[in-house]
Image (cartoon, rainbow, N blue to C red):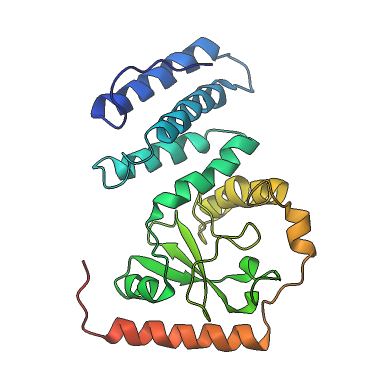
Length: 239
């Protein structure tokens, strides 16, 4: 169902009209049944419109005052869906570009020291590839839990291949049961259905040998933890 919004992308009126359009579409499809699909229909229409708007205005979102509101609104509508479509799943790669993760691991460690990113387990980002030893892959997640970045600790370069790349989280993980469930539903299950990109499936990825828990991986991760701690203890300025 098409959404008709004529105001400027990312303006305050834009988000107001998204909300109004959502209510209108939901009202048109609302049924007084046990299984009411109106929320999903309306949210899918809003998401389709937002995806098209972002693709047509890719540079406008960076540094915009409504940056956070865009992602909050997008994620909110994702969570109204009973399940993700393949298109919305792969769109997370478009969204993850806005995490502003540096290309170099050294710069990322500085951001970790400032509390802007956190070091996380890279267990599912250490599958063997021919180009490098995945045992040295390390993963970071932004402080809001949305954006991910994977680096190779030996080269210091960001990892972007479809096997081990970092992706955007529609529902950041948590030990809280409901948030954990949402992360599983909107991030993990779609990954298992379609992989990170259409270049290689989840089954093909997981058939590869994992370098997680290898001697090289444990040593590399420990060294990175120590380096991060040292950076945190430095009296550096955080912007």
